[in-house]
Image 1 (tube, rainbow, N blue to C red):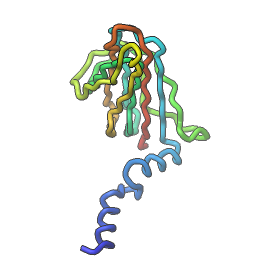
Image 2: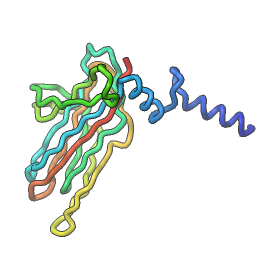
Image 3: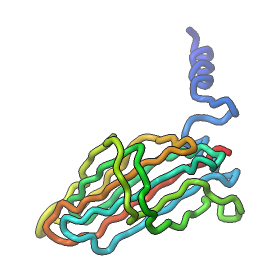
Length: 181
């Protein structure tokens, strides 16, 4: 196979039906169309042994598909990070403000991101650790889910951050995504 034929084959594999290339070039296109979004939340004092839950939901009537590119969790001490799918929302929490990554756009996000509600957990799909430390080595760390998650209408996932240390710590979570209308 010639180099030109190989190049054309690779380009055809990486090109989506709408002509965009996979992931970051596609994400940039969605930002330029007004469908790229981000949100984050910092907790200045997550108590020893305390758990905070983040709930991500694409409402069944949204008419959009959510394409989560990454979820990043950062902690000032060791954190357990558990992710569940097919959860039940018993009572809502605090909905996070969402930034349209094209600030001049008037398009609103459809995905709902909240924390601190009451949820019945579904199936565990990830469990990770944010590295911690102690005394002079208490520097904390970060973890990322590392791959994209597609949320069709009616689909949700729940992310728990669990402070595994013996003292309070700061922690944060950030999510970036685009939505296909």
